[in-house]
Image (cartoon, rainbow, N blue to C red; front, side):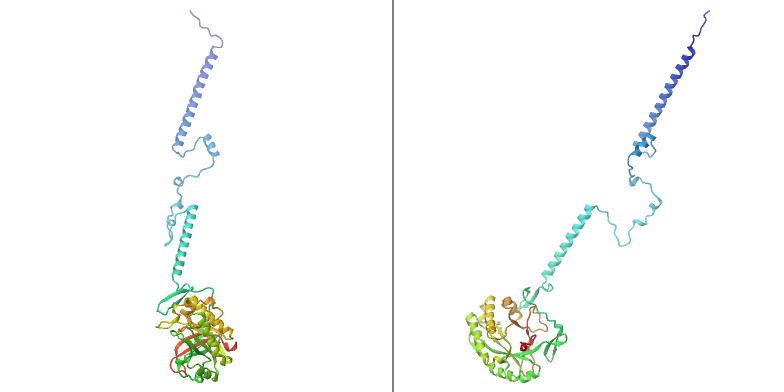
Length: 385
């Protein structure tokens, strides 16, 4: 018979071995479960799941800056369902937002377009001389019309023709209600016998008598047939008197001859010449004249010689002409020291430069003159000079 005997300490070793074994199994199971949980959470985060991560992951995420969720993933709110604000008021257009670069490009394009439009408008204005205020219309003797640039170097007239009025075919010009103009008539042998007392009674203040002329074809100097008679009658009537000479000089020698001719014939009446001595050179209608071959500079030089001669002799020099002659046939810039007698048969003259006397009609009606009368308005009282 075998007798089993327990050695001391046998029961304690078995018990400890079993505990260690179960402990290892428990730890392994815990680690396995932990790994499964971590793997599962990592899988969900890769799929974009909204579930919360473990505490460790949450702490790491909290350390990073918060990133706003895309608008497409934001949750709708109740106020988002109010769609009435999506539609602009009637007549308005919804504009797409632009970047700063786009705004700058758009502004540049707008400025360029505005500049281009302004340039186009300016070109249109420049192409229409009738409205640019820098041109004046000249009607030539052959019936043509031409817009001529107004010189900035010549003195402009400042008359306000709203102050112009007419009574019994005689015009007057007032300034602040005060009459400053004087009525005149120019007379030659073509008017025949003139009653100077009657023209004065009709309201005439002064006369411009033709002293003489040079033949436009022969070149011969001649005294007006009625000059002496007209001069003496005008003096007797108490009228202020000026004279004019019709020139066809084609050289400096000829114009000096004309100036001396005028001075000699005026000498007996010097004390009675209170108005200007005018130089009249003009085209001959429907015929060929001696001066047709002269250049603009030639005509200007001839006029200047005559006018300076009158001034040296103690008379008031004046240049006569219509708008075409004054603007296109002579250079007024070289004659600025002399007064202008403008011939322009219009209700209101559109001559842009300064003028002292205006012949406003050659077909006027005047008591004391048989037939047509050439009437004038003078803006200067030369008798006070």
